Image 1 (cartoon, rainbow, N blue to C red):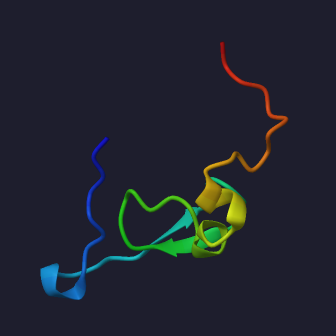
Image 2: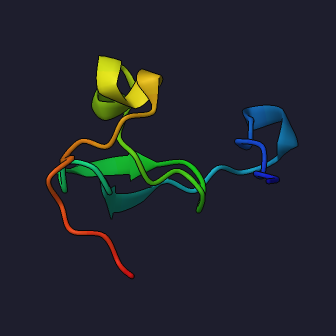
Length: 61
């Protein structure tokens, strides 16, 4: 799987956009279109371990 690199100031203008975190639904400033999880959720132990936040959620069949 390939992900785009986060843009840096040297690579040109970085336009911030407010997005809702896919994990906690809290709005946060996203620097690029692939940034969809807020910094707070990314520092959680469950995010770093790769476990789902809500393990009781139903899965699609």
